[in-house]
Amino acid sequence: MSEKSKIGIEIEKKYIIKMPNPALLQAQERYDVSRIVQIYLPCATGETLRIRSREQNGITTYTKTRKIRIDKMSSTEIEKEISAEEFDSLSRQILSTTRPIMKTRYTFIYKSQLFEIDVYPEWTRTAIMETELDSRERTVDFPEFLKIVKDVTGDKSYSNRGMSQTFPKEQL
Image (tube, rainbow, N blue to C red):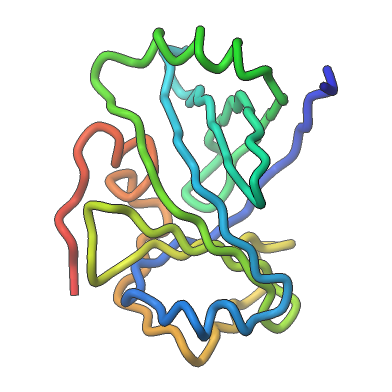
């Protein structure tokens, strides 16, 4: 296991979308699917600290991530791979006002952009889609097979941390 931390600035846009057709997702470039569990831990004000297990192609990895929000579109992110034992130990320190978030994540490339679609068991008709941008000026080329319901970039109630506290009602 690597002891290195990955540090970077993440610029992303986030949308509520109608539940996508799995066959159309599977047909996209670099399609992949993973099962994710995220747990939020106590941390300093203005920061978010989470641990994540991610099962992808039969392999489970574990990470610890500290995010420091810069503005509604971007944050500094420091990510470190951790062991299954460390994940289990840290998971017992879950922030008391939160619950674990479970989701299935579909990723693919469309017109040279990475898209991530998170499907939550609490919703049956909608999902959350994120795309990471290489600059603030870049416009998003939306896949034509997806229906955007609402732009929720910067809306804390649709952040995973916010959803771990109070899961929002499904919108259509």
